[in-house]
Length: 68
Image 1: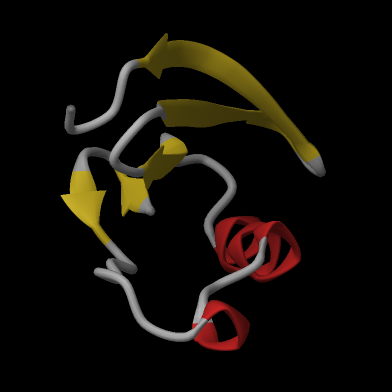
Image 2: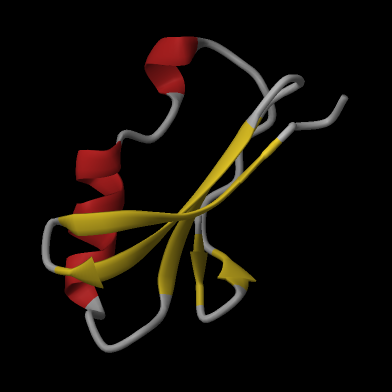
C-alpha cells in the first residue's frame, strides 16, 4: 500500500491471516483522505493495482501478469 507513491504497508508472503485487509487499508486512507492512496497486489501469476477514488471506493487501474 502506498500514499503519494511512498510505501505505507508492505508484506512479502507470510500467513494469509496476517495480511492487511482492504477495510484496514480504507481505515488508514480515511485518516488522510487528501492523498493518493493505492493498493498493490503482486503475485507470481497476476498483479492488480487499485487507486482510492472516494471514501470506501477503490478502482482497479492496472492489471498485469505478475512476476512470471
